[in-house]
Length: 332
Image 1 (tube, rainbow, N blue to C red):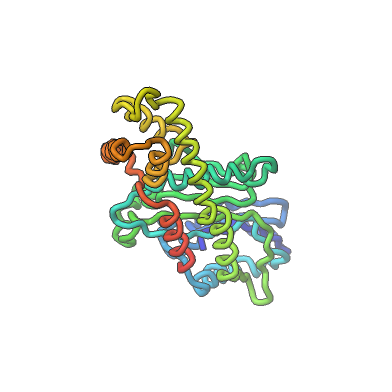
Image 2 (image 1 turned 90 degrees about the vertical axis):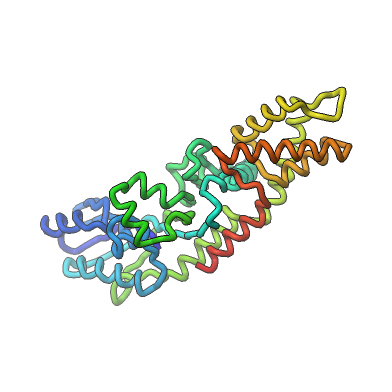
């Protein structure tokens, strides 16, 4: 569990000193009065156990109950009439292999965004939005405007985010959580009114929430069944682009300078996805002779090695990578 945005309606007004205490708690934020006896705030489950940032992984029902129990005890003496969530954020943590960096997955997530955008044509309900500049943080939403989403996936480099937003805590956090540098974090957010006031206090079923959010992740973000279709579209796009712009009509080759030009355009154009499989299949469609095919592959490999210095894009099977990520999330 990550955070929940909640709204409470009480029978009695909170004393000023209680409001002040709540605003000073590290694990409660954005505390405000909505309308007299209504209060809204955000509970951070990770910060309850480790106040410096969200590096602590809250994974059990007992941990969730402990946090909710403390929140309930703060408010129960003022008479709790209603308690609803406004948004629930559930995190998944993928441990990247030591040789990978977050930015090396960028083209995989670009392909996901392209597929989502193509699926949304005509209905405006299924859009993907991601930053093509900041390769350490990606956002997908179910609306064209990311600020008006009802469902959202935020994917980011957790170590870098902590280093940039909480620099004074970074080194200590690394000591406490040695795997931090390998973490890819996906936070699924649903805006929903969920009554969490039970007969014995505040209650949230973490397993029920997890199943629901894993289902959304698997069907709408990391859906391997759509990868083949997306890769086929990318191959057709790449073949058309190379034939129209760079093929020498009088020979079966593309010049070295033009290969550099084409390669750089593909890396920087958000409409293209760089993958070894995509390039190999495109090369097979473009060239007829084995010698030309091998020469093209060699040049791509050389350019990819050079680009790894700056980009480190994965040159691998995207479907296998996606299945690996999804399988780890399902087990978490």
